[in-house]
Image (cartoon, rainbow, N blue to C red; front, side):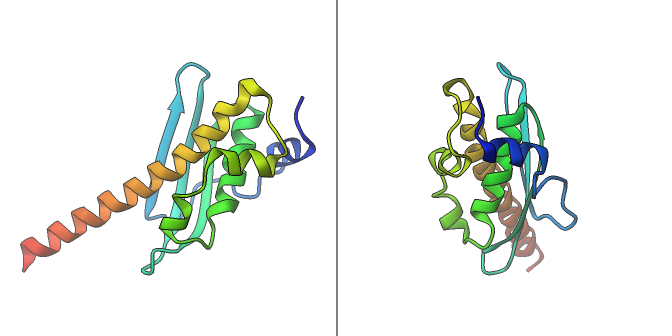
Length: 133
């Protein structure tokens, strides 16, 4: 049912856990299937993603998809990370059953949610700095 890569990533995820010093956190979920993904990013001043971690409550495919998504965006700029799609995730996983494709979509959405959170924080900081000046 699952590829060797999916099973390996599920059993030994490389990027699992929260992150101290994360400056972007995004959470997405699918009530229908019960999967919840939380992605933590450390983005530097040049808007390059230095590190990515995740916590996922879900099935084998959900955990593997989020783990791969973290690998796909590490070292990339925000703009490059926003181009990562669920198809990229599935390609590296070596296929997912049709009824599990939504897990790869959630992984893509978790990247976008974390980056949106980053921009909201930056906007707040800018407004605060402008008030002080």
